[in-house]
Length: 175
Image: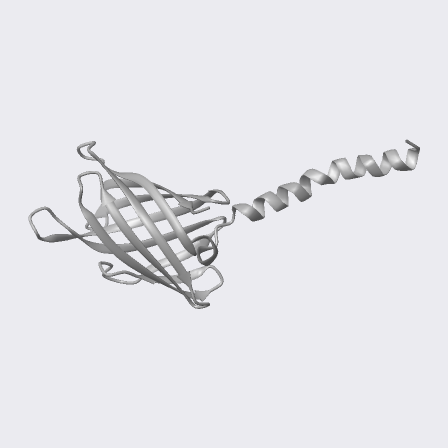
C-alpha cells in the first residue's frame, strides 16, 4: 500500500464511526406513524406501587395510517382474565406533534416527539371493580429498542399528583 492509499484508508477509518453512528442514531428515532402501522403485539405489567401487586397484560394491536391520522386498535387480555378493547386516534398536528383520543380518555392526549422518544400524557376514566370508575393520569414514554421493538413506560397518578402505579410494556412489530 503506497503512502496516499494509507492516508485515504486512515481518513476513512477515522470518519467511518461518525457516519455509522449517525446512521444508527437515525434508526433509533421513533416515528409514531411509521412504527405503529400494521400488526403489533405487546406484553407487560402494571405495578401498584402502594401494594406491590402486579397485573400482567398482553395486547394485540393493529395500526392504520391515512396520511393525517393513525388509528391504533388495541385488544387487551389481563392476567386475571379480563379483556378490553380500545382504539386510539392520533392526529398529526405538525412535525412530531400529535393529539390523541380514545374511548376512555377525558381530554385529548398531548403527544410529542422529544429527542428520540415520544412522550404523551392523558387522563383516562378507568373502570373499578365495584362497577364505578376513577380518573387516572398517565405519563407515557415510548422508546425504540431496535427496529422492531419499542419500550413503553408510564407513570400513573390519581388526582394528578398522587402516584399509584407504573406500567412497562414491550411492543413488537409483526414479522
